[in-house]
Length: 347
Image 1 (tube, rainbow, N blue to C red):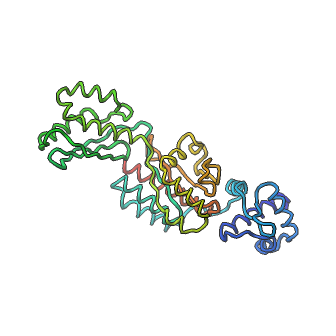
Image 2 (cartoon, helix red, strand yellow; image 1 turned 45 degrees about the vertical axis):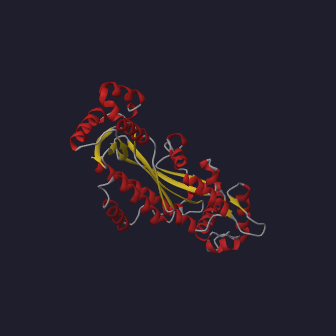
């Protein structure tokens, strides 16, 4: 075996062993794992070179070796082997459970996040599909009190926002229908980017005396539409990640603090952070995320497409020694399944 091929085989064996056991591996144990096809002396020399090259680390002088971030990156990009398709039975079970909530896009994404966490044992991250050119697709009003009205506004493709508005008059069914007609006339098919302060001012002029009564509804609609342009992040499986016991206490505190900042996750997944142009499956290992809190973690994410200009993200966060070969097929399948179902929901 050529020296380079041998070293790569040794590196892959060390990583796969460490993923399974979490324990450093020594040359003697590695020789046995390789069925003594390479001598312990040769393995020791190769391991020393892999350490010098930055692909392995030696936690203690007398201990075995563990993968470095650079080693994981080489493994993921070039050495990883595995079955990249889920069993048909599991595919069918995932499809069945997702389809139970196909009537409700928001609930559908929540269930997706729960299923990913359940199947992987890691923290799942799912974002809503964002349309490059969102618009208002439906407006509804419901009386919830004498002068209180609930505004429900749907923004393409799957965002439903609600607000309770307190008006200056008692609201009868006839008044409610009149307000509904005005809102729909002004808002339906309106690009989200156009529902701004200028739009509010123009509406106030058009409505004249009626504006004083309807202002809370239009202001609430503007707030809902502006919020819809932000990426929404759904996370599940926090307790599973904590239970794995693979992080030091200080690491756990940093990771969970970052995960609570959903806007930071949205920024990390955004167009400007390398994900969009890095291929089908995106993997960030350790400090590749450029977030100190995530240094001891890896993220596997993939973009799903809901049809037209809509797209969102699906992924998992876990320790750097996660089983990449096992997890990537899950993320691949969920991305395809969610995209297919959303296209059906929105068609």
